[in-house]
Image 1 (cartoon, helix red, strand yellow):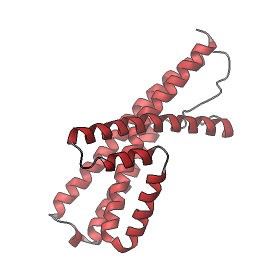
Image 2: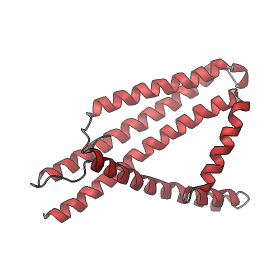
Image 3: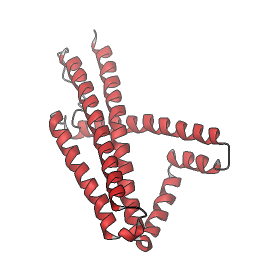
Length: 203
């Protein structure tokens, strides 16, 4: 197997690795958005200007803004058309975000040198700690102003726990899959005598 083919396969594995890490990033984005939403409920007067500024910024983005405008413009369209647009946006954003993250990792690796890979258990432990902090934030928002929430406290605690468990489960799966792909990539690179230009195993 020549060096050029190995380089192409290495890039493919690197991209596939980021496609597995992207869902973890998105699910954490969902969890943090929920945390921000609960904070917004408890502090509406301070949060409204921030939300408006964020929406205006998102709409102005060259790629995401166009899809958001298209999706909002079809809010009165049939459900299948809107669903199709949403699915198209999700898969397009997934592929593009994975590619952007891969390029970002390549740039950082070129500027600062190859990253020292972390062992999988450490990554999962850190994900667990972050999940506990997320759960604490959700529960804390409830007890700061329980009058803003409809339903029993036990039901909300169950919902918060399930959301946190989902975030941790997706994180564990993504980290494990990405770790396996990184192992394959390293095994491929190890078969050549030349030093690799890019190492994306820092995450």
